[in-house]
Length: 476
Image (tube, rainbow, N blue to C red):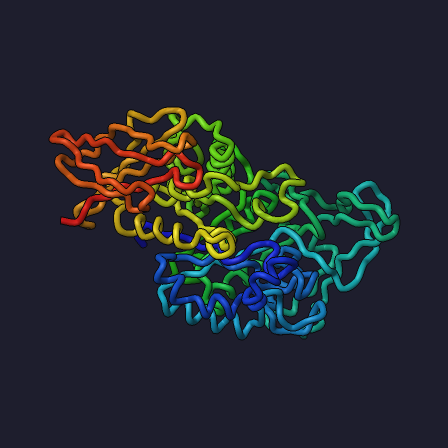
């Protein structure tokens, strides 16, 4: 697959509040994606990242991260409804079949760290010897043993966040248990799954095989993967991969802003098939939004620019966690300025797999602009890559040389933080002498011709909204 691009197909507030009023078609997401299959494929996307399709504790209102029953994809009357927030299993299967017919691959968002919405509580002994009444019994009565007859109880968990007896919240570790060996603290929320328990570990791995082989997905996004036992992540990937001939993709959500920490995490899991979202690179987009990024060193930011890890980076600008109503309460800064510069960076780069966020694409009116960049990626973003020697603190240029396999390929990408409303001009060597270029984004109207040594005076507009250009060769 050449120059792949991922579309994240959901966001946190989908079909709620103002979004339900403004985008009523999103009420039935599986049907909507099915309906848009042709246009999504034509735009140049290769992967669709689906939300957790299983029944959550919140039933029809659950975004999917409050996992109740992994096996219920909108098929059983549980938690107040048959369908999930996004539709029924039948609608999901229909969408999957249609999307595959268009050549698209599908990524399932797997929430494997915890369970919520237990059917009953049990009395257990905690690590400190005290007694607690905890919600840890999952009987899944609506499913009636279809797909699996395993019922969960306290032995399948390390601990919980609520003691019914004392009416207290906190981290309650059970007696004879230890938190799993995860990269970050094992405990995150709800009833924390104990992956030292071989019964639940085998159950989850079998479910993963079912998602790939029966539901026909092509990989997983692993939610909160740094809170899950490292060996479990490794074994899940190994065993699910071994059970199919598909070339699967696995993307871990390791929310750390240090490339070194991200590389350390990937090394500890020790599975070359595991990729990771490039949170360190996104942090640079926050700096660029504020206008205080030193763009001279932009070629070294993020996981995507680290030797031996470049192709394990999944780059992104926003996702459901970084752009939602409560984001800023947690100190997360949403990128509301110079967003197209960020998309230009990830879509023109040689390394990494870029991800486009549904809200940006459909709800914020950026579809046409992003489509233009995806088209440039598919047509021109080939060959070797290097940074321009003329990069400065405010303006960054990146060159692709093109290759013989893609005639006419190669490009000069420019992004800037400047806001003087004038054209920023840089002399850049493309390696192609006496060649005419035009700005594929149309933000700059004039043409550029390189001299006998391949140098040209390329430009980018000094505004936040149009401060990005992708220069490509005029067709002869």
